[in-house]
Length: 392
Image (tube, rainbow, N blue to C red; front, side, top):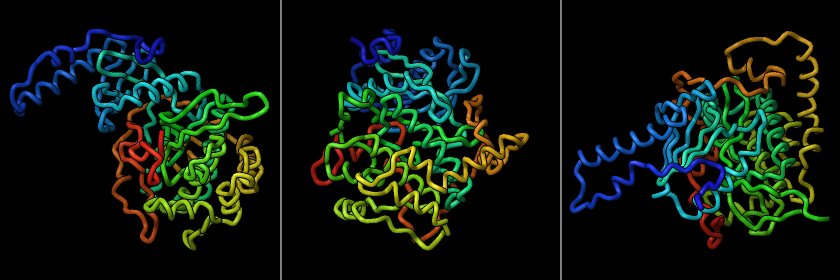
């Protein structure tokens, strides 16, 4: 039985088989390492070419995976291809999380989710082709701008709710919502990515709900019930994570300091504290407060939409839809456009950006990814629950 079963085609001919037959009698020199790398690259190109992908540059890499751009003949656009090494990836990831991720994303189709295109399995690798979001992540934009004005934040948060609500309606929970997993398409619309911890069939079960006892994700975005290792409804934990995202978006910093686990647990059990700067409206703070609340008081998505801060967006949509859409490449104008622009756009390769050159404002909890390998690996802080670690 193959890793992906019917989700992907198994290709037996992998050039790494040839490399595996070589016996190393001494430490490899630079030339042999280079030859091995060239052979692996040629294998990847050959496999992808046989499926209509012309491989391009690398846009991300981790300990056992990389992401490359590729031109797809089938889809007529540039796509992102995640290439996972079976030789280096943890077995629990290969046997549990990766197959589950592929199974989940195959059944999802929404304008605010990264679209899954194809999975290919060979003897030594798994290739996952997906929509390419060319404008980086929400985290990149926050780092560049320091924080996000409420007009943009309101639109992006609404799009995040749209995507999460769609997933929950399909019985799918994400369990790792955070700023670096929210990508931006050509029109600067939110695209939820990285379903590595996602799980399906999490809707109602008889008269009750399915609880999860898998304590996974990222510390700074994890709900109190996850941090306390209490079986939880993952839908409500996803909602908590959206509140952390909104806080990080408008304040440019995380609400909770995850450097000390014991202190983190205490922080999430108390009312959220807001900094004096930047200035954020009371209506926005109210939304955050009601989301980052104890489970019994935490708002559900329909209730969040009825908050005055988000109702202002609904009124604006009604007005904008009666007007002629404004075409502009400027990100602020594009983001403030009507909801009719929330559609999957043709994927193009971005131009160079200086977004990483700007330093974050001082005196803040660093807004960082919990692992800079973010979309490529199971997070290191998800191995066990002892001593404050999250477990899978």
